[in-house]
Length: 265
Length: 204
Image 1: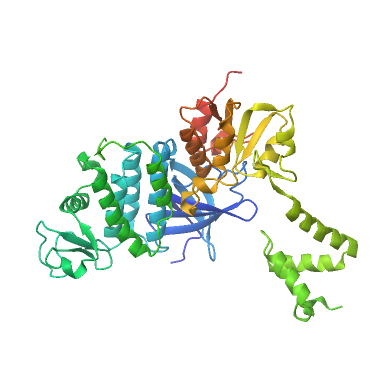
Image 2 (image 1 turned 180 degrees about the horizontal axis):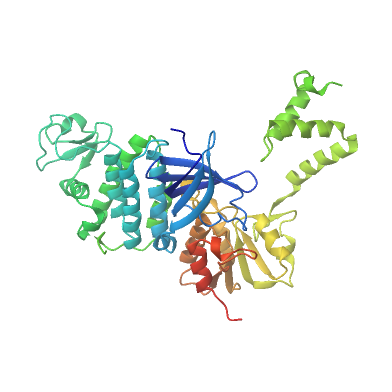
């Protein structure tokens, strides 16, 4: 069967780069084809019909023409511009963090519909709770799961025995949690408190909108972030650049409320 | 003279082609064409080009106030006492100042950030000329800050960051209007532009 020259798809725009005088290179994530890179001719001109439709963190209906190396955007129509993300800096910076991870973990010509749905679910969650980091932690854990890289949270990666409350440690490159018996083997590794382990299991079992309000103090938030970021950056093999701006915003913002809720829907 | 064989026989020409090739939008073929064009130029014209490049690198710096590119320590706009000293228009780069000056409708001062906050590219507020902007606001002379960053996600992030930093200060912060461009059609406008155009509608 011949391959169609043009195709239509719904896509989440992750980022774009200027290309030449007025063109744009758009990187987006689609349900059917995974990550797609496409050029948009003259999209940087104010008079372009594409302008405004290809901004990062926009869900668009795209019509694409297949090219030898890169596809070309023929038409674009915004399906959802996530206004809740656009109107507040904390939400916007968290949305960009999601976009960067999706760009890093997504691969071209390798569809992962679960990852696509997850990203949309998390962006909606960030819109509901713009100051909360819980949607980001949920995204990191589920991103690892849909990529087949979920860290072990229920049994020790060394002795394979079910975990009982104790002084556990976490090893991103070892695949997850080490029990208190095997922990001395990895004494230099990051400790994983029972509280953190419980929240990680909750994030793994529940959908984001169903997670009840949690009281997450600063220490627990830090431990959750450090544990998941270590895993994500281990598999990504590089630092997540947008996290530096998020950290900067957290430092320059008055103390956040202790209660994190992802379920206001 | 067979120009096709020159790059291998003339190291100085190869060097010129290599240097031109580093310029934005200039590929290897364009670099060769430009290099051959320079060779064919009269000596005084080619030297005038070289001199202009040397001159611009030696004399152009940042204006101490607005951070725009300037030959002197204070640029002509900042030095012009007839301009409204109570308004500062914040732009991303020096080309934006030229675009706004072409409108002849703004008579205040400028501040050039030399970039925008771009978390995905690792560009944070500390890499921009934001500290210098806050210093300018300390005197209390400035009454209004007009943010004129591009209507892109990064431009908006920068605008929100500035607004957030100035919360509680006795300075009015405004933003250029969002809406339809002249010659634009409603049919092809994105929903965000249209909704903002509605919010910012004016009585006629």
